[in-house]
Image 1 (cartoon, rainbow, N blue to C red):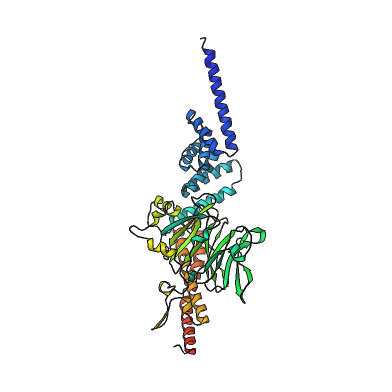
Image 2 (tube, helix red, strand yellow):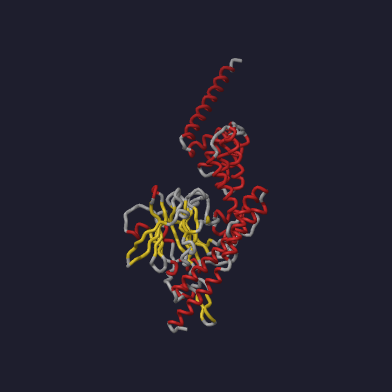
Length: 478
């Protein structure tokens, strides 16, 4: 009986120390010092493994320090214990680990909790929509062979690019315009050296895309690209134009992006003299990180793009890939396989078994001046039984070249529209009655537009052929 007071004192001391430990851990947590708070909450969890708050706080510390496996485990316990914010953080864990379907579901659960408490849900509905879009992209991930990667300084990644002469040139904004500005932007110049595309600050200090033409050996006539390309609420950077002169690639951090900058493509509509609505590139080009500066070297049949996935803050990774002209998808029903391709957690996951990429990697770094015809074959434009053109440089008549460019652009537009229709029809088949009602007008409109486009490439190609033959005869070359 005499020992009871000692036991009581000891118990009080232990409870006091525990309280102090919790207070200290919570103070570190509230200050955002998750690395220091994490072991403190881990110790508290060993004493009370069922404690809902401990599981939540420790799970958040794991998330903030990149320990996604433990973050998922302990935040899931927090969700079961009805900790509201565990739902939000677990949704983010699912998103970061490419479990986008689970992320969308967890956001839905979190939104329902916010609705019950009459709290704002807009930001999280956007996150839910982003997760749903990412899941659709994951299911259609492209089978792209990424054959090499190079870590580079974020401000000096252009050294990893070695474009052939046929694909134009890249330069930093500061070097090209001879300015001391700290703007980390790039300038793309076409193969003919008569046009440049670049980004610079515009209204609202947002980065917007511009182009200039060379007039009398001077760059002049600066034009800002239209608003459907230059989102006024986003930064738009790193333009690149294919040799067809109409296909524009660039990066934007607008509301549709999966995370930071995403890659987009648009095409100049020669009929309306405007750019078509940009389309978001799929995975693995885009990710939940920043992805930008994509280039397609059609002569080498290779491409590059930059991403900061899995990189420290001041570094990026430049990925080298084989151009996937057919845009084939990963042939697997296993989502884990698709996640590996989409995330590029290991580029060897994208390689074809038994394929040696050594020569292609060497080609990527080869200096290839313009006009190396044996590796350049953009198209096959048959003029007559003895004359066939393979590049725009082969075409003598400017009128014929312009007509044929329009034919090529329309052919690409038809392909994109056909792919879009296939996607809409798939959604229509799988959708409920309301969704089918919403999709029906879009499908009918797209079908009508496609039917008007289908005969046009052949007509333009015929006009181009006739114009070229007329020109050759006038020059007595035919």
